[in-house]
Length: 171
Image 1 (cartoon, helix red, strand yellow):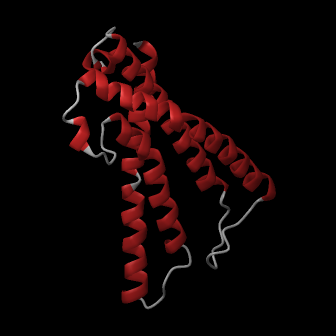
Image 2: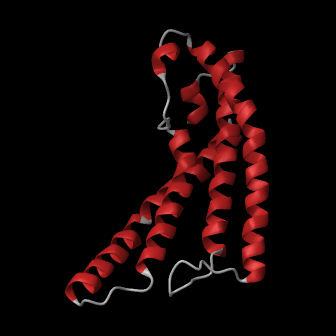
């Protein structure tokens, strides 16, 4: 299904982008350790960069984790059920979870926009950076998760109705 493939391509790209963020995170931590323990002068910015980049990694990766089935699941019951029964259970979960996600995406969009308009700052360090970029990443991350939930719901419905096999949907 083209819609599923499109959503999953976007999700895969965001996951790749999130994984790349490990490089600036490592760089910031190395600079902080050298500055603090070798030069005796800790940085003003490393703490804030670290939590913001780690948060961005998590937010950009959570939809991809759902796509590849890496979220925590309890398989005791699902191993005993058929593929169709598991798809029905997942579909119910996605239908219940999707309104919460849509609401969260809506609220995060307002939160990010407000932070941008007011030039909100973190207040957590002497560096005190603006926070709208990380709030925007939160919004994007949850929007991607909502899209991936829609893709997963569509895959479950297709399995329940017998229209396609999961492997065909993901290709």
